[in-house]
Length: 83
Image (cartoon, rainbow, N blue to C red; front, side):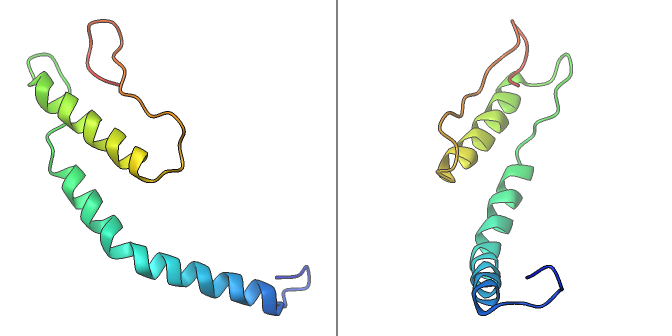
């Protein structure tokens, strides 16, 4: 889009490609997010630390799978839960 609000053929093609990419990736993104929200991940004293760790690792794996980030790690703060 130019400064006056009109679109150029190049910007229209990019917008169409973006719409196609979003449309194509939307079902898998919803499925991945649905999978992630099913993992118990509330952290408070007495909560199952394994569930929190599983949630943290699932989110980290999803981030790794994007291929966008060079370094994705699950870390803990001292003896605490993953962050």
